[in-house]
Length: 304
Ligand code: SER
Image (cartoon, helix red, strand yellow):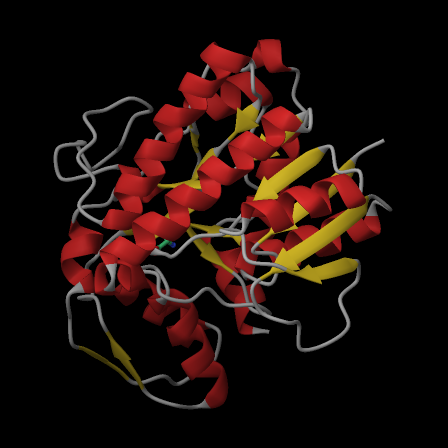
């Protein structure tokens, strides 16, 4: 029987994973450095994922056999304090690896990101294994983690699975400190009747995905037979690609009268080093990945 630990469980992905496992009646222990605002749908323990001893004790106490390690400082926040970003993203990852090895954890899920790519990755359509020259500390930690996933599999047979997420669009729990956050900010401004000042220029094209697809992709990857996985590190996946300009047209076509001006800041440079489109054919071939939500459906759902 699966007994799952989720770290960083109160974030954008964690909240939705908890709902998913709750529907499936699967035991979950959620941990986060913060306390939840309302009663969670599963067991909850406040814990800092840099505290290895505490996480190890919780794994033992709750008899955990699968870990979803979601803790991370995202791209834009990471640039404000790159040392903190490295420390949190990498030390917590290493803790989870050591804890997994000493507690016989069956499988680990660890999200990577399109931030592993860079200006030399042929950004018009990024393939699975291009040249990778990440420009942010976040991207560097994700690429390092990907390399470590391969290393620990070859060295110890540790089964860590990973997806290179594009921007994820959710309504209930929003991300914080990312470069793709503009899309959610703009949708929320439309809903509230505010105007919006966009930190990317109107023609910046980036890949995105609806939250339900992001969760389903991870569940699908985690339940695939290991021998079917040809990628040891992390799989490219995508939903659709969009620019702020196209998003505004879509928002207006749903009946919202939003005013937007464009004031690109330091995040423009980050976005310019990320893919416009992503080739996810390995995920399609190896574990039958197929996103359910396209651009129009996603924006419509997010505007509800
Ligand atoms: N959404 C993330 C960010 O913008 C990318 O993985 O930082």
